Image (cartoon, rainbow, N blue to C red; front, side, top):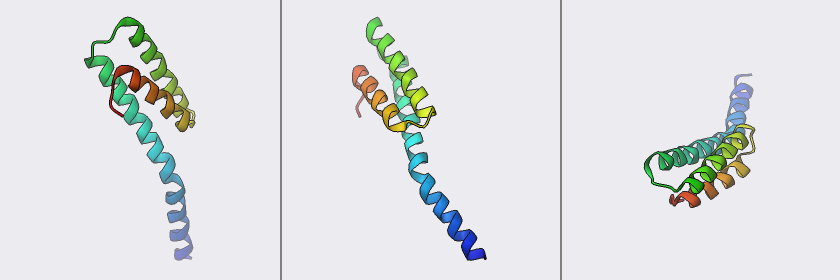
Length: 84
C-alpha cells in the first residue's frame, strides 16, 4: 500500500517537472525583459513592441502555452539585445 503511494507520488512529480521547468523559464525570460526595459535605453517604438511582446508572453505562459510564450519572449529578448 505504501509502495503504491510512493510510486504514485514519484510519477506525479516526474510528469509535473517539465511543466514546472517551462514555467520557471517563462518567468526567467519575462524577468530578463523587465530588467532590460528598466535599465537599457530603448527607442520608443522598440520599447512599445517589447512591452507588447512581454504581455503576450505572460498571457501565453499563464494559459499553459509555454512553448509559444517562450518563443514570443525570445523575440522580445532579441529586440532588446538580451543574450539568450
